[in-house]
Length: 226
Ligand SMILES: [Zn+2]
Image (tube, rainbow, N blue to C red; front, side, top):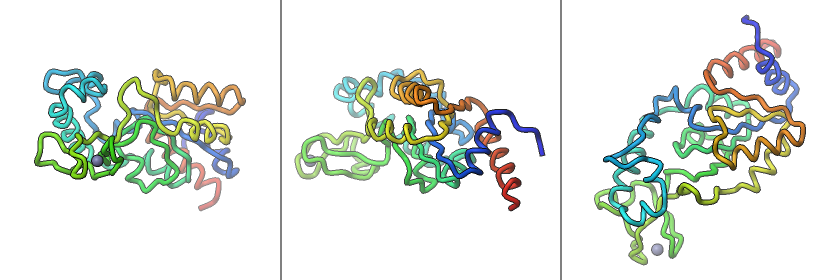
């Protein structure tokens, strides 16, 4: 067995003691799944602009071309070892990602702060539809009220979802794992600040999350004699 880092030992001890782990995840956890994270623009428009409400309202057809492109590409990806181990360990996950990879592990202990690309909704009657609804049309619309359907994601600059639930989750953690995010976005940075104020141990894994967690898993199994 390889020698563990101090951070890995902290996670191993928390797991073997049956204490509570909360993971805060960002795009970096999905890199090894092969997601095209490097796509900075689409049809000449920067992705960070496409993800704003004014862009969606002004150019819904272009928005939906980008959205459908992402849904198609992301549906080919499988969860990484890191996604799967978090599920296996029963870790509560708070994610900034909209790529569905945590959900596709079957995780139910999940807060998707920025929503997901799984569904669309009507802003008037609040009906929900699968993300492929009306895919033959440039822009999907609600069959009841004729309204343009919205993606079930949080646009840039708008409030994230379930933040108070995420705060409660963070406050119950014995250890917080920050995986694949440098915490440049405020909501997640705020959660980590709360954890630190509570004297909760915070472990950041910015690279090689798969091998970090796989080693933790191997050592935990070894410690348990299984
Ligand atoms: Zn409607």
